[in-house]
Image (cartoon, rainbow, N blue to C red; front, top):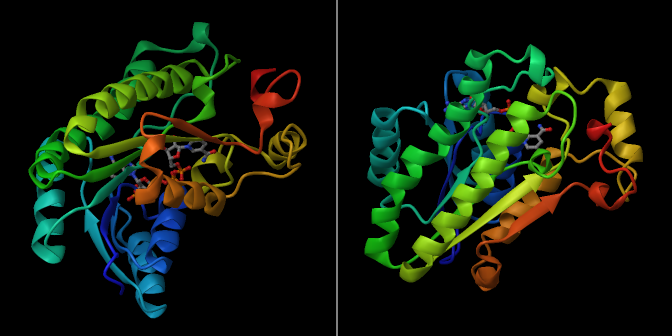
Length: 259
Ligand SMILES: NC(=O)c1ccc[n+]([C@@H]2O[C@H](COP(=O)([O-])OP(=O)(O)OC[C@H]3O[C@@H](n4cnc5c(N)ncnc54)[C@H](OP(=O)(O)O)[C@@H]3O)[C@@H](O)[C@H]2O)c1
């Protein structure tokens, strides 16, 4: 492990984009905390893959929408590794209901909006004093290009991610004064377990055709951009939203989900 290696907490890292991010950062020499909510087996698999490859990882169960569990996540990380250098806010805390506005009940809408924001609010609130005390820190929020366009079934997901983008901007502006870099990484459709429920093979194929690259975005693609966002030489990107969708929004008509 080099002198430059950092301790990075990744929320929701047992599967999907979070797991790929943990593996990518560990390969680059960082110590990673693989946070998960309940699926201990998936988190243990990510940790053992990393450790077997010579990396350093620790799984910690904590529901990041619960401030008490977040406090324990921070305390256990600091106990084990001594400090926290960066947090990747990735946890997919509330699955959206992909239904049209007239079929969207308040409970589902509220669950998505509140879940999305609770998953970033408590940990941000608790990590900022640590970063302030040391005069540095990195935060990456995982948003979605669903915040950028309208389309059938995207009202709760898009509204939640728009709110996250705005929240991230406020945190970037606030925390810059004490050396914290805040970026938002916004993937388009990514092939993960969570997305498999709504992104059928036909739909994924349509997404691939609507991107400049002509292929679906994989979790590892997003992980590489998160790693870039955590590069200390890229502080100038603070406050930015880095979109990872193969350029889909540039294609006339926009991403297929909007149609
Ligand atoms: N997949 C896409 O197409 C796509 C596109 C754009 C943006 N995104 C965003 O990328 C992020 C990750 O998505 P994904 O598709 O990789 O998700 P995923 O495959 O469903 O992975 C979810 C992970 O989050 C954990 N988790 C869920 N709720 C949690 C909570 N309250 N506290 C702690 N951990 C929690 C899960 O833990 P357990 O397994 O223990 O429940 C699991 O490790 C999300 O923010 C999502 O909105 C995804």
